[in-house]
Length: 268
Image (cartoon, rainbow, N blue to C red; front, side):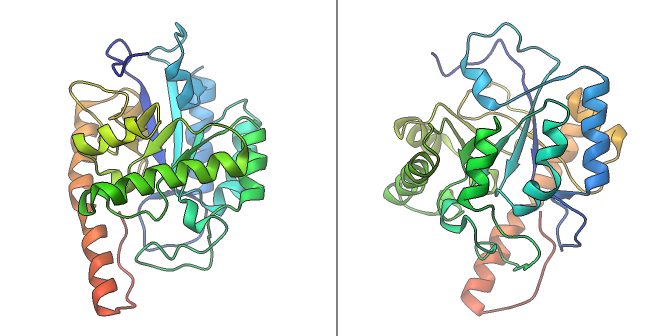
């Protein structure tokens, strides 16, 4: 297998929360919103696959192939998303922050008791149902800001924990905050992953360790959702603009860590 997927232009959608709780965050979809999106995919005969399908010599991967991904492995997914997809014969790929499995979201710059991370029992049940489990690192640190040794630990150790806990291989990595560079992609490959996803909606020369992904946000209408599926240039520019401001997440997190602030801020 090569690292190139130039013959494929996959549509990968990125989610976080799927719930009706109110968070200081735009990286979520309400249950009703998510249901509308999934029903649209079903009605228009899109093929919903897990990311590992990209590793196969599979001629069925085409413009109607959609990959649903969920960062952070939040408990609301178990409550609101899993059965909804299974009822429509759909599955997705869930990325786990291994240090916080079954715990509250202490890694983030805001704390919420409403939604913790999925625990290992739930993750095992989800994996048994056909969902793919990937790594979102061990601690969700910005990998661009740490040493080569720390990056390797975050990637390697999280992969090992998931494989030991669930008894199945981990093929894909989701870069924390969607941030990556060529050194990170090299380490990811060396660590044994088969591919990785970013938060960039469009990358000119696609590489399986730099897969583009379109985030789904709270304010997205069904029309905007369709634009993501069609890989609209205007929608991609909008996502790039939002991703630029998402760097504020890292800045605020570091500020709170250094100053002990307990304020909540908008999350991107």
